Image 1 (cartoon, one colour):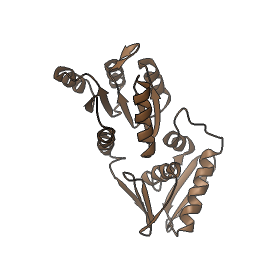
Image 2 (cartoon, one colour):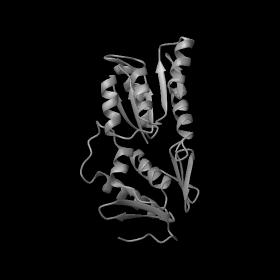
Image 3 (cartoon, rainbow, N blue to C red):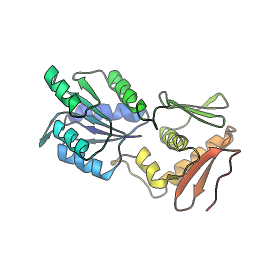
Length: 230
């Protein structure tokens, strides 16, 4: 899952991005209203974390702009504006939640997860296929009830494939889920991550298979389900 943090306080933005990345999210962080709108025109985001007081524009204008465009991206407003009238107005304009600064990072993370659970595609916390179970809240993976250690990026790849179990996931969709704008992505980064993940799963007796569809992407299915070939 990919999140956009719109926050002009560089130190706070860095802390938020670090927290979210440690919990399995790909994160882009921008500091202005124009940069936020440009980012949303470039990439798909599962959630927007938005400050209201921004240089060169008000965060409320971003909120209104994306709602006018018909986008239903969940928006968590995190701002120092504590006035009740402001909170009511912002929620009425399309915000999904409102958090007043200063806030604890633990509460921020909990609210992010709560908003993401409202999405039908993202509602399930534990994703399963065959004997594989991935808890997306704790970022823990079990194969046949045995915990195994897997690097974060491979867990994100696995979560993306599990959410679309039996369906093709394009290479670009995997890149969008795993990497933020400031990450260096080598030409074969996704192929290498899938290959490592496949080997780990096979080594632990996972009853799922990940099949590469040449030029298209990847499909994960339980081992007893036939994967179409192209």
